[in-house]
Image (cartoon, rainbow, N blue to C red; front, side, top):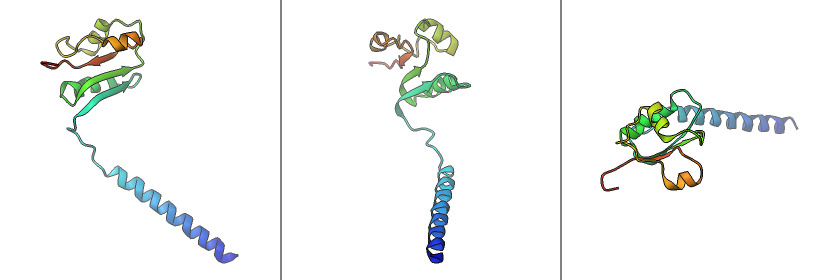
Length: 113
């Protein structure tokens, strides 16, 4: 019985060691900085999340920007002004988003697109 206890304890300690190594190994990974994606999703409420999303969009790292959590009553022009977004950079809110009462789904304007 004593040996079973030590065997179980050893297995738990080995599992914990593996878990801590996994967590350490994850912290050493550098995220890709210039990887282009299909879109950027931003949840409102955080400090400078929206500004960071606009910066990534301006740098061409995504084709679309979706902002979740914006009040449906907020006019698109007011959202543009609050974020410092020029109308040249973004098109108007997509028709599909309007129908779903999501006025903050925005699409980057590309020549020929």
